[in-house]
Length: 155
Image 1 (cartoon, rainbow, N blue to C red):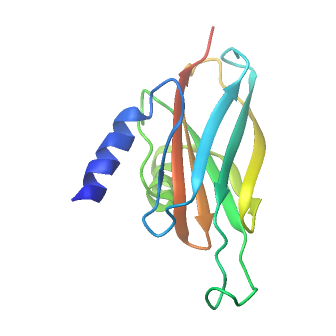
Image 2 (cartoon, rainbow, N blue to C red):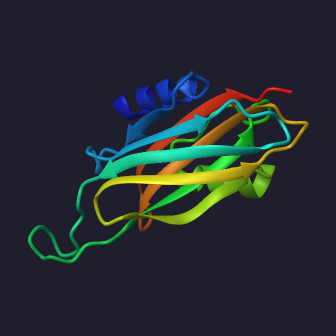
C-alpha cells in the first residue's frame, strides 16, 4: 500500500517547479534530479542537467570487488498528452512505443557508484510548450530511481 501511495504522490508532483524523485525500495540510497538551465523558448535547443548518486552494487555480494555501472535513460513528452511520468522505465518505454514519446537519453553511463552529472541537449518543437521530462537511473533491468520535471517553454 505504501508503494501505491508514493506512486500517486510522485505522479501528482511531476509538474512542480523542481524535479521530484523516488528511489526504488531495493535502492534506497539512489538519488536523481533533473534541472532545466536557462529560460528556453519553444523551438529551441533546451539544456538539461541530470544529477544524482548511487550506492555500490557488487556482483556476487558485498566484498566481491566486482560491480556494475548504472545507466541513465530519459524521455521528453508533451505534458498535454502524457502529463505524468510512470514509476517504471518499462511503462515509459511502452508510452514511447504507443504514444510517440521521445527518448532523449539511452543507456548513458552513470558510473559504478557515487555522484554523477550528465548534461543533455534536446531540440524542441515550436508547437509543444508544456513538457515533462522523465529520467530513470537503472541497473541492468532494475529501476534504481525515477525523477520527473515539468516546465513550460516561452514562445
